[in-house]
Length: 212
Image 1 (cartoon, rainbow, N blue to C red):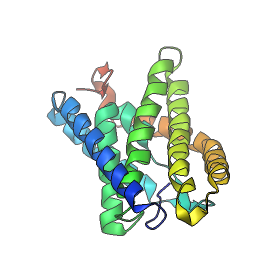
Image 2 (image 1 turned 45 degrees about the vertical axis):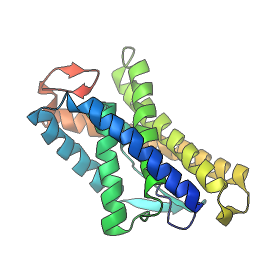
Image 3 (image 1 turned 90 degrees about the vertical axis):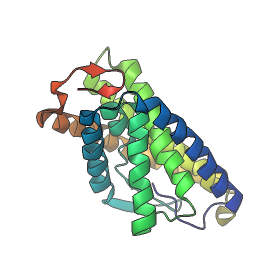
Image 4 (image 1 turned 90 degrees about the horizontal axis):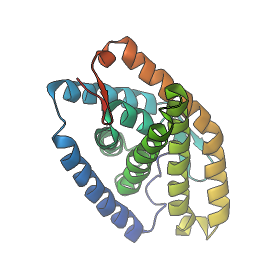
């Protein structure tokens, strides 16, 4: 759901860049004490998987694109703080190296895809995991990407490019991602199961994701 350059107010682009920077700085501080060699390696595996999955995308109305984002998947595998940092790294590389989303919209894209989806998706997963972990993963991916789409639609709907069509932009983006989000939820479950089959779940699970 990359928002391209030129769609946001310049002040909004700057504000979200600063806001995302503050949240990720706190996330890095919170995650630092739990870092082990194993978790650093897992961070690289998860970030690479999210990067590869995000290469497949398609445009939807509203000036953005739809694809597997992986915020909830990363947060469940790594914990919400490392998960947000992993997706933020992917989004930054895509913007600065591949011009996907662009540099000016980087802060907004990191906010939506790395922060909103990771933390909202993980919160939903944590709330439901005791009842059914597979259902919790699907729900986390689904609600997470829908929340990220809602955040992006509010940014775009207030931009000059859309002439004040806030309600239309919100309806199109949230409605579209609510439907496509079912696929995000299923891919979140499938991705996590693939990690488990490669042996990364041989360690003990903790509230901070998979740990050694």
